Length: 336
Ligand code: ACO
Image (cartoon, rainbow, N blue to C red; front, side, top):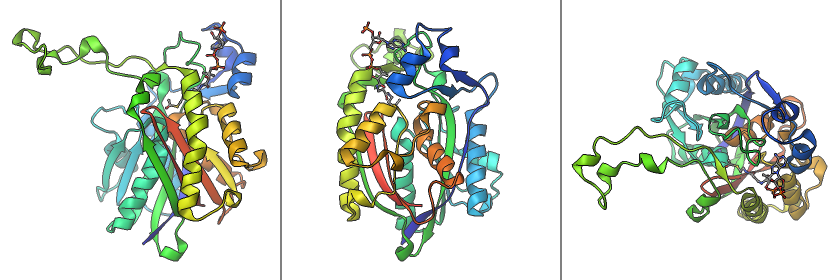
């Protein structure tokens, strides 16, 4: 059983925050941000904006391109680390799309690697049988978890949603032919947004549990804590290895890559990985200047723009790689 990508879509919030806008809140400058990261602007959800509605908009566009009716979906995977319901937001996308057939819908939490993991999960469901049309949505609103007083991290992030429709096909048309996925929980200290310690559920902690600790206080999460240098080092070291491994599994040389499409975190990371893989800059997709790091949305957002602008053409080979919190990282070799 093969599977192929047959549609993509994206959506971004209307509120645009430039580097100059940010420099009114924290001690930074357009010059510092753009030379260190390549980012010039980002979109941010505001007021009553909903990430779920943004995700549904991206999903609807992907379905339209694929000419697939929402009622013909078998599965919706929502890749997000910032759900609007802790119990999962994929069923709310199903509701927004008006699916009368109740396709299975669940969330995947893997930060900036979420979309690549979603893609491979979609392929596994299809190859396992029983699933024909799988919608993979990558959407995040990290602006809600950023410490807007921390200039070392707040300059990086933006909000967005992107989606692709993965469809079952004959094996000779297969469009997802090599992948490589990893996690390393030891690196969590370098990048996290953890539950606040003083909110831990003492009643269930056997070392300190006593009825006097009950009921537990309501939980909340800390803002994003990041050691930028360590995350940078991790990405530059492991992402090229992962892409090389995925290419090897696909039986393809690096020279067969038409487009390198990395998670959009920092232009210097993208450039370093491209140099390691000897992919020339004209074959590298980058749109982070306009959107910053949009976590699980960054790959489908950049893919959608590249497809709709005519840059990526049918039949071309894309090496996509995500990396980020967890730590998690992974690559997929896909044909558009
Ligand atoms: N404006 C001005 N100065 C700044 C800013 C800023 N926004 N941020 C930091 N500085 C200062 C620092 O205080 C430091 O000053 P000092 O030398 O006087 O102490 C100096 O600039 C250098 O700071 P560094 O942190 O060493 O800067 P670096 O070159 O490492 O760049 C950056 C920082 C851009 C964060 C980089 O490390 C990076 O992009 N790392 C990767 C981060 C990443 O991609 N994270 C997301 C992963 S995806 C996910 O899953 C969420």
